[in-house]
Length: 133
Image 1: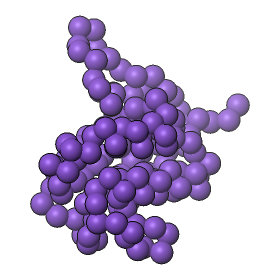
Image 2: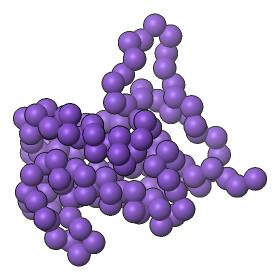
Image 3: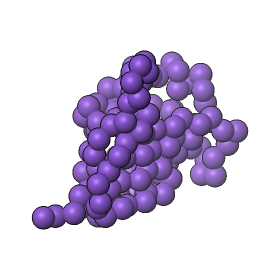
Image 4: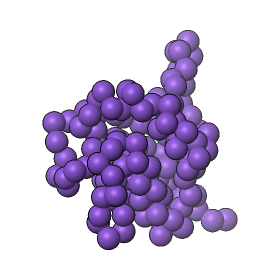
């Protein structure tokens, strides 16, 4: 997996503009919200929901034999822009603990609502697990 960074562009912070991946097994991970395995929310706050949603993404990926660094694309849908901006440092610490220094191509989209209440954020991802040689 290689990061695509056009010459002369200012480096992005916390994401990659693009990723190129050699052949491998593609894993599509549906939107994951901040509930636990029993579909129960333990918090109505954005930061703990983000942590649980990212853990959920990684659990689905692990089921396919993947690791965090195999994620090449992630989209976040969030209903609370002020809470996201206020929590960026906490979100960054959670990201580094769970994902390390791996930053896939990402989009953050602010939406009016999410299906599963009281969800504040939903994460979906695509990963490519390298072919074993």
